[in-house]
Length: 435
Image 1 (cartoon, rainbow, N blue to C red):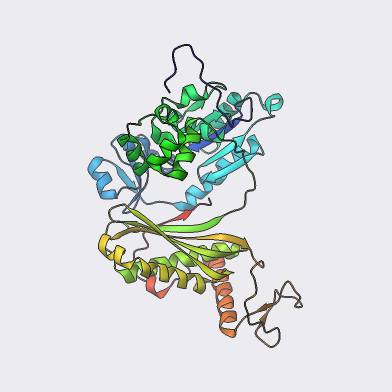
Image 2: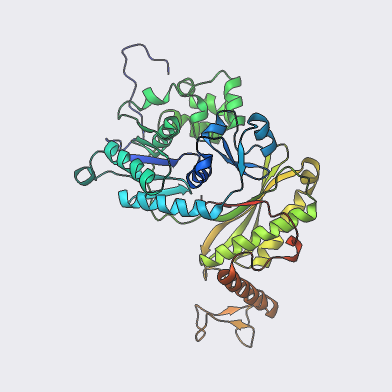
């Protein structure tokens, strides 16, 4: 920001607390760090986690320019000495669980935002735990001691600034943004540090001569909106002045359940892509039922061979957890984008279920027939909360889903698979974390 020497920066609007008590804790190169922890021979060496697509890279590999989600072939051209390892999602899930246990032992106010990062509010703990800086120092030491992983922590008065601080402090660092000096910290940073500034938005800003957050901040909001669009302009203008009144929220309701599958660079037939999508639907609908939820909106996420992305969604008439209903929607969405897939190739497909509600909250479909053998109940005498009136075919579909869930819970997720997936490369499947 262009301010004469000796003139103090204005206090950022939207900051509601006087002390920097929000921590953003972010594990460093999480998947790769777990692999290096579990295999001592990988420590200090460039490590790439993934199959055809790079899911994670150690900092030794990043030093050669390896980034996610580039192809493995491109990564190995940049870093031929890298060690490529297949992902072990169960190991990452266990490590994440252990780290979040440390978080919750630090403060009850923990908001997880992904498998490897969370916001923590440590306000009010001064008498029992010390200053936020002391708390963050102990947290990093405990994660290293108990889980064996490096973690970076940013500390600030807002969630946004704490997250920026952790990004600046990486790897394996600790960075406090002093209260009252937020703009002094924020404005010299490149615009790419702001949430919502990807390659496209950064290109627009650079073309307009904007390189730093401070240069963006001095633009009138309307002028910035003309450069990047109305919604993005309003959002980025607020962030450039560190305006973020959001609080750390615990127990937030899950807004989506999903999974994605990296296909690699090998050419895939459309039938094979459909089979992979069906396998993803089996996974996410099982998780949906296990969570006691139903979904109304089905989202298909695609990454093409040129690394461009596309998202398609469909809202079904009635909230459901039935596999075949959701699979029909996914197939319809796939056929909608089939020309793009055949033209560009596909490196990743993902399925997400959104617009969730609790099981039993769905509206009954007409026509209603509350008599006869087509009535499905919750196991006890039928009442207003347990009666479901469905055709016999739908009842059979519910029974089939329940039977398959039972088999997979007992014998493992691959105990039963679709015939279309027999003999096929299963690639790399990764859960999509809740929003």
